[in-house]
Length: 507
Image 1: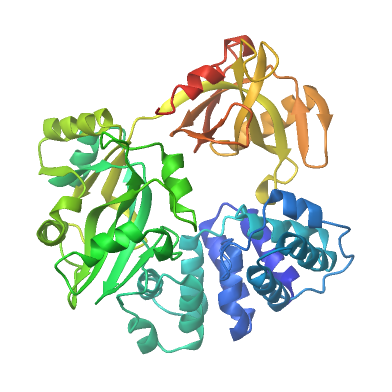
Image 2: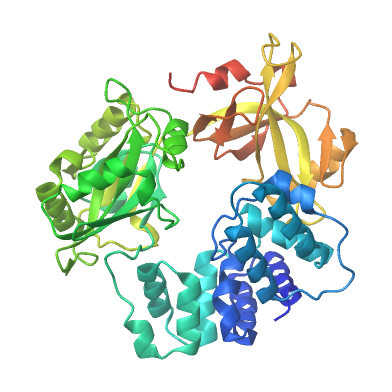
């Protein structure tokens, strides 16, 4: 199949809000794909190619982008083969070789295909083809029950492989996909609530557990063989020898554990998330030791526990790994839930997760049985620039560049603004239209993709915190920033300062 057909489908999906229309468009595409292209196409649609990360960033992508082709000629298989070559390129001179591979690829791509390829490689493909929608489309294309497709995808951790099996295999083969020790499954996800008591009201009796600011891990042990996977199911066993040692010491033969790992300070408190991720993402050994904390067990010694109630799984976890179980209490009392939440925050953690004690482990699902509660931080910052959108936001200014006030000129000109991040989240259609018009009125310069504006517009954002960053001059970046509202009542000189935001970093 020509890549242009897949790209057109992503545009069609991005241009509609109708879930049904998205599913129909994707199902039609899946039916037309050759079997050999199905798994590849699914990975491309969700910006998760089967090769994983191939070492390309914005700088490399920009350096490789030349004049586009006039007519489409690239196939899905061509792009997949290029990603194979990029993934295999390593060692001295690999950066230049990657750029050369990319130049050949993008030279054969039309302008729209170039943008699509960049989105896939940078993980910033905003098409509306979320995994849930795509799972429904696979079921539609294969004429299989959605629940059967969803469960197979969850337990295999591979939506592309599931799509191939559902479309080309039998119903019995799809139903036969099960939990296998050593093969990662999609992690269970949590909804959100404003308070622990509100979450408890939704779940009933629950396990109220600390929400750690660490890295999610799924650990599989089969005899003496231990494998560790990330939230995205990438294997990182070689990076976490201390976790391997802990799990090998547990009194079990086979086990699958779900949990978090994080760096601790000298007093046993959590170090900043950025330090955990720096150690977590390193191929070489680092000085910081990562401590594992487990909050669930999916399998033990031949017994699958996915469908067992949480209270049973907690009992198993208490028996095999009491020293490594995440702190928490089982309660139906809102006052107790709030106390545990306060204790978690006082200990330097993010908040709590409230989990219904009778709930099964719903791999890959975000339902009301797990509910996370953490304080929302809001700050007023200034818009420095705005990027043109793509897909449904084509023709609209979308991604905001955000700056904090620097009154003393610690990181630039006194009274200037220091960039601390970007966001396109939280913007309604009305806000998109308004800011597209307004920011062009405030324009001071532009490139093909970005409009820089006078720094006079204050926007209130919600964030989950900040992290250390060498990308921005203030040394920090906002975490999960989303727009709450524009503050017409505030002057830019009243915005929050870079010093205020930097104070959020734990020492």
